[in-house]
Image 1 (cartoon, rainbow, N blue to C red):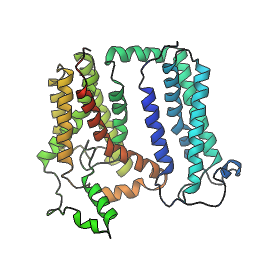
Image 2: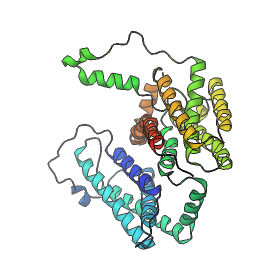
Image 3: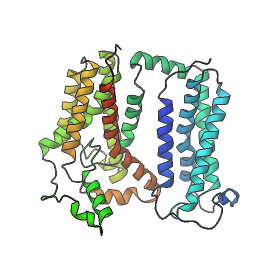
Image 4: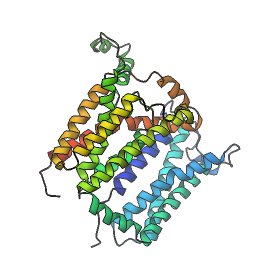
Length: 370
């Protein structure tokens, strides 16, 4: 029987496929039947208007999917060679692309394209071929050995969440590292949904409008938001030395992603405008707290992570959305940002709640030696 290995590539590939579905069908509005076969785009002529960006993004967008799927196949079945893994990953990527382009036939805001379908499939092929090449030269096996040395056996879920954290930070938030700010948006959405129904009177009415966080509370939110992914990494990391290496790496990745988000939203000259004094102190406090916790036991870290998540979400959802949200929304919803806007925003909303579920699962397990 062929040997199989637990790998983060499988859940990552499923998560990436879900993100592709969201990006391909966003904004999920005004579905209608045009009266033609939904796959009629396959025989349509070459589109009149296209750009190099459009061509490149269709290839690049599916390359990680092909890569992750090929790695997942090779790690799940050691008897499957590189060619078969590439073939399966390419076919899976092509099938997903075909389904997305076909469904776009029912969306007025989207235009199905045989060119996009072909480029998506090529992207999956490129990613899968790269994975097979790395496997042939031992890079995938080297990563597996490194992962076993660095992380505990049941680290797959945490590694997937850590990989998604930077993407979740890309949509600008009211508070730096402030993921999971959903209260005001949920309140408005539920009120709109219940409008013109008798149930609208059941909605609790707030007596006061949400006020911006005072600097001290903002500092605490920033510290907790920066500390949460570090604690998540600590929970699955084997040694103190490796935790010490991951601490600045995780925070550096978060800061770089936040700067990129600000540059995309407000221009490169404002890339570091978010780094105010409370934010600087909050990040420094997260570094200090992380350093103190380097040698802490795993279950203690998981319990502390649970408390940090709950406190962070509680404080953050007492603040209103950013005053610049409308401007940011208008910028991100235009042109090439339209798909990425909804995708990154949903990641920012859901990431801390999924992490909360993961931590509860970790704490519910019996203690085991690592």
